[in-house]
Length: 301
Image (cartoon, rainbow, N blue to C red; front, side, top):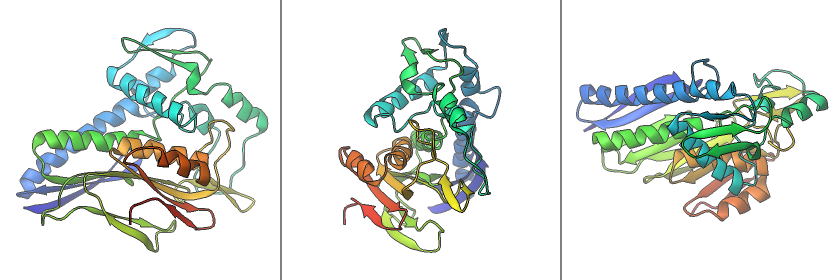
């Protein structure tokens, strides 16, 4: 058995699939299935294609009930639970706020208070009704959703599930840092991952990943600067402003979808509240690098 690698781009991010297989032909079969599944999910969840289910949902007027795709409805139900347990720190309805910003690593400016307040009036998961039979209703005008904070983790988990059904004995789905692992490496050892500093010049921690998932959220890939100050791409759902206080947060949990969402929630909550939040959850750990590069972690030694 050997390990085979397949890098590509989807969902606006770099992906890499790694699989344990007898030969390249078998590996390519698994890679094709994984790529097709990620493409399917992108076509379903992206905000940037007019034909996607998310774009269709975002076109719905307020106070009318619509039937949506069952898979997306189920994902929204889980998003609703995450919104509730995080007390609003994780919120897929922040799309109107995201549109106020451009995170291109360049000098930019904050939107006005009027613009922020206007966008806040169009957001808040408490203004979305999820009804039975895959139905949904927006209670505010011009509401829109974005799966950016959970979509890549969801895609990683879906490929892992698919590969299990196909009989894959070992593999890694790396969705630009949202990682789901399956089985063991070709030599029988566990897969491992490393956590680097924010400029990626130093590995701060390396650990094995036996059937765990991990996701990292930070300010080192998407951000903008104003008057020399750096603003993270994560928007606080309640203030409409970019969050601060954390350079990066990595969350380990049983699923990449959950880790992806929790990493965003902790970024919003800040160090102290975020640590307390994760510590209440079973089989979930954090590794936080704050704005002064201090490490906070509850990973077992």
